[in-house]
Length: 380
Image 1 (cartoon, one colour):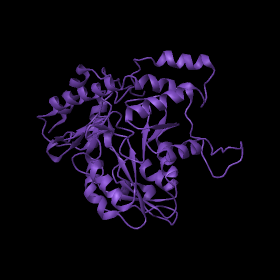
Image 2: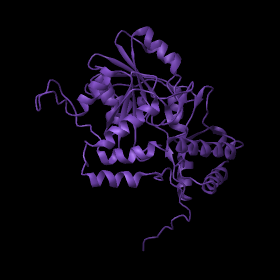
Image 3: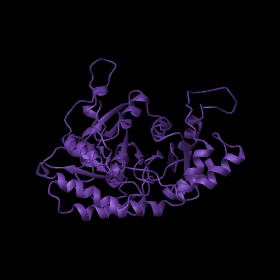
Image 4: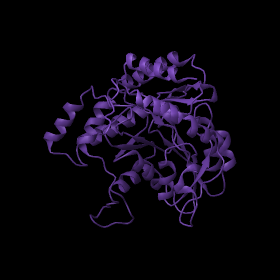
């Protein structure tokens, strides 16, 4: 007979969407209107609302955050022969979308405190082929944008923000998404603002917005079915936009919930030896998309041991991203593969030791206390 394993009495998911605004009302309105595909008023309203939140002129919705990065690169005419500086510690889309655009990703290590691209390291990687800097606001903490913008101006580079995890974050009092030629957002189910799947590029540049709209819609020109260049089917539906608009209306409430969850974790974990907690540097507003911790030697257990033990107790976690230089697809084993190997010690340590805890907007104080109680019980 097979042994039946009992499920833990308590289940704490790493994240779950909270739909407590007008999502159902707007979605049913979009449904009843018959506008269920990529046309319809909710797409326009969603774009306008999100651009306004970011403090920029234009929003161009698309099917997901990955497509948003690809669109931004193509709209800025980045392609073969170009280099784009990206953080070594990031989700793989940072490298894969640069590669898909025909350019070469060049890795830059990250800061040990914010886990964002290190401006001091950017300088070392700029060459005559560098065309852009991709600044990823990691896990909700903004990049240090002032030196990034300064270097970009000095060398004639474009700046692209990847703000997929940083809805509502601020740098020097301004919202992320307002510091670049194009800023990319994801509205996947685990993001602070979600429509299940979805993305957007925001920009103050009318020329970039025009190209974004052209490219996301198969590059249909003024004459239907006559194409001057290759485009993509990257559109967002009116149904998804209806959900997204309702979420945007509650952005301040949602980010404050995230920050309260982080403050509670900070208090509960402050005396646990060997647990390095996330930071909020001066001038920044961290929205703690996911509350990440880094396990140091003093904790006495590895990340893998802790994640497995927490899973047995009903606590879901996620590993930090694996650095780009350690991805098998970028090991350069044959001429058709990118070779991104190298040493990026901060990124490597984060990938080896980092995990994030349950961080959903609906996480209760009681469940948080349970999570931390289990972590403390694992410390050696």
